[in-house]
Image 1 (spheres, rainbow, N blue to C red):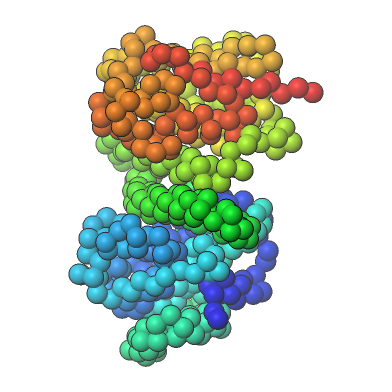
Image 2 (spheres, rainbow, N blue to C red):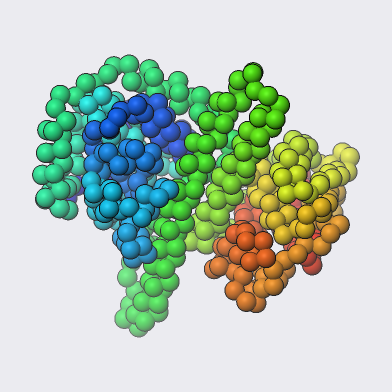
Length: 471
C-alpha cells in the first residue's frame, strides 16, 4: 500500500534536515506557491500539463486550474459538507465538474498525513513541493531534479492504481501527451531569490495548521459503546468544521497574500503620487488585517479541537516580553487601522513597567485581533483608549471607549448567547455590523494560552492581565 507520507519521505531523500517551526514553514509554503504560479508558470497560454495535490488544492491561479489536469486527495469529511468538493479559490468551486472537467477528487487516508503536497508537470516546468518533519524540525521541500520527480510520479502512479486504476491510466496518458519535457537547470536559480523576496515582504502572521489529527487511543469496552459512538460523532463534527475552516482560510488568505505582494511591489516605485500611495497603503493594511484575522480564527478552532493545546504555556515556554515597547511599535499601525473606520486611538503607558511573560511571536497578532474585536462594533467617531499599568504581580492592559459599543443583541459580555450570535464556540456573528469575529470564549482561550487572562465588563471595557516576569 502506498501512502502519501512515503512520497514526502522520497522527496526528502538527500535534503538537509529541517529546523523551522510550523508557522515558519507554512509561511514558506505560501510564498513558494505564489512564486511557482506568478513567476515560473505565468505566461503559458494556454497552459498544458498536470498537477497532483493533497490534502487540499494548492493551485489557485484560475488560468492554471482551467488548463491543467489535476488530481486532489482530500479528507473524506469535506465530501460530507460540500456538494461539489473540495473548495477552490474564487469562483472555481462552483465550476467543479463544469469548466474544470480535468480535475479528479480522491479520498485521503488517515495514514497519508495532512502536510501539504503539490507536484506540477508542464513541458517547461517540473517541480514538487511538500512540507514534512517533526515539530521543531519542519522543512519546505522543493525538488526540480528529474530523478526525484520520476520517483515521486512512480509512487503516485502506484497509489492511483490502488485508488482508481482508470485514473492511473489517465495520468500515464497525460504524461505521454506532454511529449519531451525540458528540465531547465536555471529554474532553481530563478525560484529561490523570488521566494526570499516574498518572505521578506510578508508580515508575520498566524498560518495554517494541520487539517486532521489521528484518533487517540484504542477502542473502548462494550459497556462504553454508546458513549464512544457519541464521542465519535462529536469528533467527526469537529473535524468536519475544522476542514471547512481550513478550506475557507485557504480561499481567503491566498488571494489576499497575492494582492498584498503586488501592492508592496508597486509601493517601491518612486513616481507614485501621494494619493495613489495612500490608497495602496490602505489596501496593504486591510489585506494584512484580514489575513491575520482569519489566521486567528483558525488557531482558535485548533484549540477547540485539541484541548491539550488550551493549557497555558509554562514559564519555560514563555519569554520575557517588553509589552510597553510592543504597544508603542503597534500604535501607528492601530491608528491607521482604526482611522479606516473613523475611530481615534489614545495610548497611555505608565513609565518603567517591567516585562511580562508571554509568547511575543503570537502576542503581536493576538493584540491586533483584540483591537479588531473591540472596535468593530463601535460607532463612527468613537475614541479608543488603550492603557497599560501595574496591577500587583501583573500588568493590566485595558481597552475602553468613550462611546459605548453598539453590540448586536445576542452575545453578552460573559460570552453567552441569546438569539444566535454565537456560531459554535469559535465564531461570533454580529448582525448589527455584519462582521464575523472570534467569540468571547475563543478569545479568552487564546490569551490564556499566552499567559494572559481576559475579562470583559459591560460593552465599553475589555481588560487583559499579563504575569510580570521575575528574576
